[in-house]
Image (cartoon, rainbow over all chains, first blue to last red; front, side):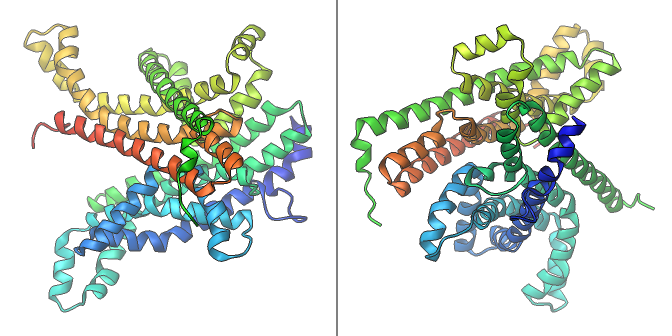
Length: 231
Length: 231
């Protein structure tokens, strides 16, 4: 096992980098982080639209959320794979294709978290902010959003865990990430399949279990703070 | 891009699509039933008052929740044949190997989530309720049958339905090991006809409708059996 890790450890960690794009575990983290960060602005708009009084915005955002939560990521990846080059007119590298698919997919899930966060702020806050003369966007930006965002942090962390797990499918279009590295190692070392995939599973296990724990601790902390129990 | 669904009049294409839908449904139904039974067994096993048993159950749940489903499928399909006893391996290989391993992986995966849902359903009922039921003269079985279970089921059903939707979407991951489910067949039809847009549209609509249908069924159940008797 030690010899195995000695031979393939680097490939697991960074893929074929520096001779190629960053892959392996690092590739997974980069993809998940960019995916969630890219989805956030879109999700903020969708989440606001879901809670707004404008009929059309509400309908469009609801359809968006329900659609992309109801179809498998793999399907969205295939859509991105053949639609993006048609729309842009040039060839799109696999990483960007996967990133686009993940952003669209995650925006739907993130929008629901943001909606819940916005609704968790008592309506009196918004009313009071408007009453002292703030405009809608001012009140939103400086009163409702800051409170909503701090309530959302544990959910956001959990969504990051989901995103990390979701990215493991994009190796099918040739994106260099952890599952791709494992596939490569498995095809070089023909008799070490179990070891290869257990190392892969262990990576996800440790990372996701740690982040989930962190999310849980934060959640308890925030709840205690809200109840006035925290020191 | 001209959009015509003329390929649907081709019996060969229809056959491929039919196989895909049938395999997806079989995988979904199989994993749902097996996963639920496994979850019930785990609930019973976890009652054994031995630290080691409970730690094992906890590890089982953590593994399946923190490792991506597609990696779990790979571990089973590529890795497990190395250590499975020969008779078991032969038995699996006699049937549809890919389908069997995907079914095993998905069942175990979903069982961990179902188990958590059942457990939180049971935990949501105060222990005093059982005591009260016993004190007014119900037997232990009667207290379980008339007091504890009706409430536990109401708490557990909504998350179980949600998980089942995710399970349905996760059947698409079985394509990575070559199970002829809907996504895999869509890809094959695309290769055969080059009508990418049409076939992906058909597959997407099928996933969308099925997911929304399961959600609607869940909402129906939740309306009929509300978790809270207060409202």
